[in-house]
Image 1 (cartoon, helix red, strand yellow):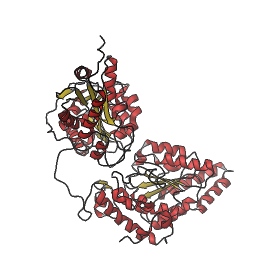
Image 2: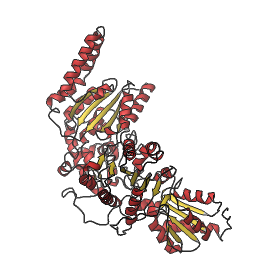
Image 3: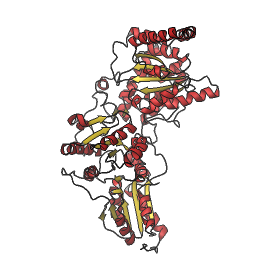
Image 4: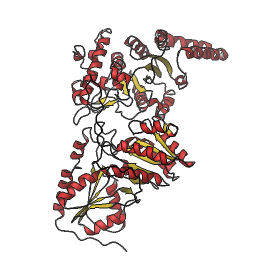
Length: 626
């Protein structure tokens, strides 16, 4: 079935093929992708759209010596297959399997680890400058999508690269538009022509000749820009100092390969604009590229079949609350940095289009934009993944918290996220949020508490954050009525003896299960900031051991807040902190990963019994300072 593909074990094998055979290889590779991803789940539409580009890059460039950096990296499955990981695709994004994104430790062909957007040009520029400094004849390519180009970091890198005179090629993979008439035979011919050494040499020679007569040189430049402007898009990238080529059909190997071959011979920064189609070659994905962007297992013949509605996810709970709250308060504004579907804003965007803003992949801008809205009386809600909020941290502090503006952050994907791995895990938000003044931080333990906390946060006239995990909760019924929770107040959910478990957010369920087995007191702390200090001190007085449990890194997290509280009051009580370890955890099933971290019921019981055995009899403790 894959006669040609099975002969490719690395790009060196690919480069031995006759160019005519590459068309057949592309078809086999596309069929393999659909079959493989349908069995494992993963990103599909984006990968189907870059098959020909991947083949052309490895065919023209001497990888891995020549460097290729893939922005975001969710379109690199074909790259992985052609670089010796075809069999590894059977365990894609699974525990112990290959990652869904480029990872330097996985392959020498993964030249830079990516998963967040807009980093490729910066990284590739660094590699190109390094090659120049080391005197190496090496080419460097950054592949970036039109969505990632909306990130400010991409333009920062372009601005810097144009002044570097490094041998850098930026390939803009434009898949947000159909292949329109300008991307036809004439335009392809012009792109090949403009990428050739003859064109570049003639241009340089004419500039040298005309430099003696500046007015004539200026006239020539204007004429060139005018003529090129009639057959190509804006000269924006040339203003950055790049030689712009394109747009060309990114699925036409007979255009891609000669164009890349010509560009490879050119010196200095080059910019190639290609147009591709998401889901190319698989009809269902072509028709619904968003639905087939990230998929679970499915039947490739039948396609994705809607499953019966089960428990609502935390994302759905947020989306429903947002619409309900918007009905009640016209000041509410919903903001997302390019994650409408992932953050649950589809219904809101349809019901309240004039109050919905997708700002693109621009987390920093999203937060400062929200701050500006809040300055003039509106109530912005920023829906953002925990791992993406990291990218706007300075804006959170400088633009929101210092000015004490009522911007609310609905933080999805808090804690471990499963198959996407360490680049997308929300392991650090309690730590990096807890230290920010003026910010209230909440962690719901179930679905209904999530809705009520969202309402509570929205009522505050100050910065606030509600962080909730990916997927579903324990299955608690969600009340339609919204009511505010007393700020900074937790609750005891189980009375026990000797030890008390202080659970934050998603860890309440395993803590209650462990509490039943150990006959321990269990508290649902609810607020990370402000911490319920009265509850902490009460539990400290009545128990021999306090156990803090959180789905966040232990360093600086909620458990650290408990220790700080005890220390500030002069109370010495044994405290066992349980949470995520000081390590980047691999991809895998979330339940498996939590068990590995000892954050399931059995892990909690085991850790607590080990600690109790070490302590023996109850210890004397210092009294609270008056």
